[in-house]
Image 1 (cartoon, one colour):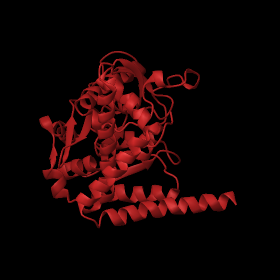
Image 2 (tube, one colour; image 1 turned 45 degrees about the vertical axis):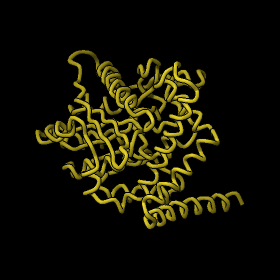
Image 3 (cartoon, rainbow, N blue to C red; image 1 turned 120 degrees about the horizontal axis):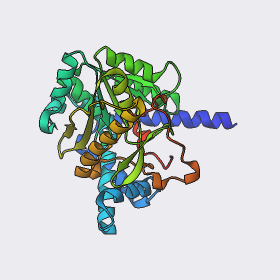
Image 4 (spheres, rainbow, N blue to C red; image 1 turned 90 degrees about the horizontal axis):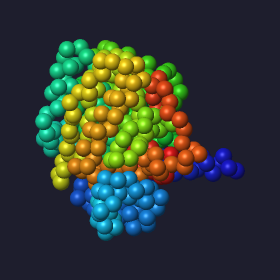
Length: 333
């Protein structure tokens, strides 16, 4: 009986995603936007665990001097931003590449340095926080000349939903490696980088239990050390990038390359580079806090001390989700 109920639930979830993709693409964008904002407002008013966690994270950005009213207004804007992300994911197949390129601003044009590195035969690692619209940014960098890039995705449940997202992202030009099963993700990513390819990895939340402890908005936080470890191992250029929403478009800021320190062990170098990555994230998120879709724990102080694992080695298996189900769907560690 339990198996039958689980199968029925999986079927309903899969049908729900399929309906979302089919329906949202067929209504005017203004209708879809209003509907998703309405849903975001409902979630915000309910003050579930995800919204409470979002507000706890946003409090670190705006500081203790901000009023509760200011925090609530920011969290509402954050939930609307998160709703916009999902609306655009469902509509991305009808958003033209020309519109994405024309409507994306890139202050400083930092992507040019990435393309120059690739032209010289070096790989490039974009390390990102969960901000803005990851899929749109991926489509944009491909349209700008990347051709394709490689990333890692968590396996969603049910499997049929994971396969839908896998096919969707591959249709955009992403090479997606499942986070579990199969060959070593670290090894495959290193191969792509040594061949002069591009790798994109969200890295602002430790999902492995073996992340690197950094200082972030004045507190200790855990972030993924994989991007820095890959740069140390392969000589690829590590470039943080932060995304946000503009009124009718999108924003991308690509930060300068984080160089590999000349001295120290491989672990010491990885830790130092991960801290610099966190500083770049800090700067980008502070400029657009409403677009940081982090509805889960990031800061060490928010974890149960008894459940907080020790920092892992730099060779920990990469397990970095790009799905926003992994970024914002609850209150998991």
